[in-house]
Image (tube, rainbow, N blue to C red; front, side, top):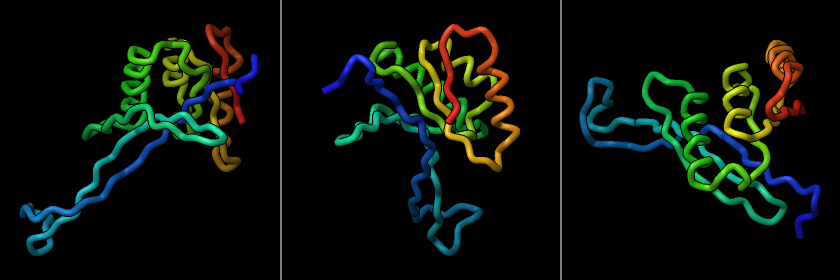
Length: 139
């Protein structure tokens, strides 16, 4: 049972799906080619249950951050700002504009950083220090 200090957190994660086609293309090997579909998905991870909320394709020529913001905007419209409290993201998304956009949507952010990405840590720290409309947490 949730307590008053419980937090609902949504994870935003990139993924790729691999498939095969028999349609010939310039890169085809014989009559079979492989193709990839890239997505960003959001799911609530709990101790006993993980629930996939939505999926957004990464369009040709764009990065994961653009697709993730589109996904989060749609989730906010569908579920509302209070459906969860924070968004967890990988260090790949740590860019000032992305974190600021998450805050404008009304959520806090939690970033999982690896030590070898020190420049990302420093940029996230700079965003965290500025006056907030929301709050960010580095882990």
